[in-house]
Structure formats: C-alpha cells, structure tokens
Length: 459
Image 1 (cartoon, rainbow, N blue to C red):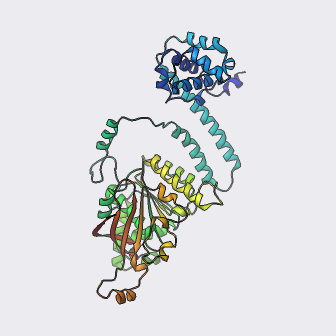
Image 2: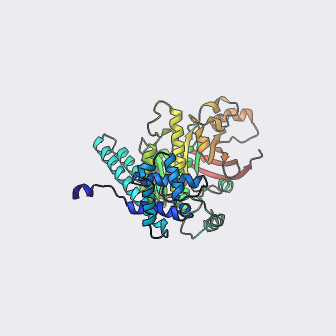
Image 3: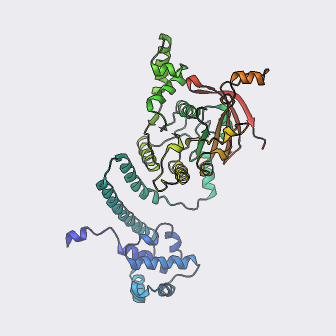
C-alpha cells in the first residue's frame, strides 16, 4: 500500500475544495484566481467540474453561490457525479474563511505543474528508448518539452499603461552608455541605425538578396559591430558555410586582407602582423558560432535557450540562412508551409528570448526578370509568411551585379561605375519608416562600409 501511495501524482484535495468554497462565499474570489488556475489544473473530477461551472457562471455575469452552482452542474448533467447538493454544502461549511484563496489556487497550480513534469518525464523516457542517430535532435526535443512547462507559467495579464511608460523610460536607448543591459542593437552603419533606431529586441529582421550580393557578409558585419561596440553576446548559425570559412571572412573584414589569401595561407610579413592584430581584436568578442548543416526550429530553440542560460542572456541572433532550416517534419511535402512554420517559429523565439533575430533569406529569380532588377517583397522565395512574420525586411541590391564596367561606360560615359555600391532597401518596417541606405561593399575583404548617404522614402 505504501508503494502504491508513493506513486500517486501530486494533488491536494483540500486546496482544490478551498478554492471552490471561497468562490461560493466571496463574490470577488473568482476574479482573483481565474488568471492563476484553470479547470484542467484540478486533479479530482468533481472539483474540476465544479470550478468549470463557476467560471461559466462568472463569464456570463451571473451570481455564484450554492444554488446557482447546483443549477449549472445540473444543466451539464454532473450534479449527481460531484455528490449533489450535500457535497456543495459540505465544502462550503468546512471552509473556515475565504481569506487566502490565491494561496490555495497557487497550490492547485503547483501540483498541476508537477503532474505535467511527470508526464513530460515519461515522454522523455520514450524519446530515449526510441533513440536513433539524431542525438542532438532528441536532446533538443527533450529540452523543449521541459521548457514548455516553463513557458506555461508565463501567463500574460493586463498591464497598466503607467507601468509600460515607466519601462520605456527605464529601457536603455541605442546611444546609452555605461548601462548594465543593452537596449537596441546597433548595426554599426550610421544611416541604417538612424532609419531603424537599431535592431529592437523581440524583432525578426530578414535580410534578403539573390546569391552573391553579400547578405552573408552583411550579417557577419552586424555580428562583429554589435559585439565590438556594445559588448553584445551574439549567436551565429551559419548553415551554408563551415565555421572556418566564417572565421576567414571575419579576419578579412577586420584586417583588410583579401579573404582568398587568408584562406590559402598566403601572407606577407606585414599581412601577418595585421592578421595578428585582427585576431586580438576578434578574440575578445562574445560571438558564438554553430555551423551545423541541418538545423530545425526545435534544435535552434534548444541551443539558444541553453546558451542564453549559460551567458545570462543573449543580445543578437544571426541565421544564415532561413530557407536552409528545417521545420518540425509535419510539412515535408509542402515547402511553402514548412517555411511558414520556420518564419513563425523564429518570430516567436525572438519574443520568447527578448532578442533581435536577423535571418538571411533567398530571393526568387523574379527580380532578375524585371528590367530594373530591384527586389520587391513579392520576391521572397517560397513563402509570403516571411513578409508577414518579419518586423523588418531589407533587400540588398547592387547594380554592378547586372552591368559590367564596359557596358556601364558605354551607357553612362559621364558617370562613375558603381563598383560595390550597394542599396540596402528597407522595404518593410513594422514600427517605423522605410527607406534606402547606401553602403559600399568591399567583396575581397567581405566588408561593408558607410557612404554617409540616406535616401528618404517619399512613398
């Protein structure tokens, strides 16, 4: 008998009955506990049914007492199941005072959470028994199961405007210095930061372009600039290239040495000194790199939550690139739905971790078919939900990708060939203006630089 009792899941019948009894004798009690505990949190069926009936009465604006509760249970065909009117009378009589109903509600919620953990433990056991070659995937799913319990405790509620205004003035701005926490994340490009106000926490930012324009280099520049100027903690997921290739690009951008020479190990004595200096500059940056060739939303969530816990928070997440990620597997035969699942998952993760996520995205060939070649939102490849979920969508456009120097000089004899001239087009900005920013791309060293020009959007 003792062994059997030890295996019973956690519950407290007295606390459950105290919640219901308090509601029956105190008309304000239901409003104090409805946001704390839900019907499914009650272990005993009759307690769950009674609480459910109380909530139904409250939502209809009706008085809650022994008579109305009995009538509501009778309508649902459950009055006899709970023990009838004598049961309702007993729990009301046994309650000494309605004071402390929130305390009882928290006990009910706590035990329900413990029961959830027990169920999740069983699921994790099954995952482990099933095993398979994807160990990281299994660990990721297990971590997400545990985190789902944590997330369930974060119930939203109505917040007074005065509190939100206080938070606004307490939050560090983009130019704040000597603060313990980082507010907006600066891109490192003056005109872009002026236009966006920096990358805001909980935002999903999509940087899209055709292959070879420089979106991967731009994202690395964002990572380096934030880590260098703001001591930001940055996670970089480079699905398309290996970690050593990323290091070559960072060293090239920092030292000004051709990335090809760095990759091949060809360097002069002067270049050697420059590389050593660049290595010293980069060595102290809090940039964390993952070059897994296959990353699912579940794995990304697990890795970021683990890193955020280790570091005490994250400031920026970079993903290169979105369409190389995988979803949950529910939409294997429908890539559009899978990409929609991924973009929605990234937005939810940005809010959950309170961190800006910047993801590169591939554009369709539609831009190349137009005469101007300038990207449009409709060019986002494989899913319109990317535009819907993103808070900011930026396009990279370089005219020198479509016109060579000879063609340009023949067509525009009095104009300078726009080698490396890049338009960063902010096509969507959920919380601010759109516009265009001019940058210069030095492709041989994978570095973007300011041109000190800002074109206002006149639309």
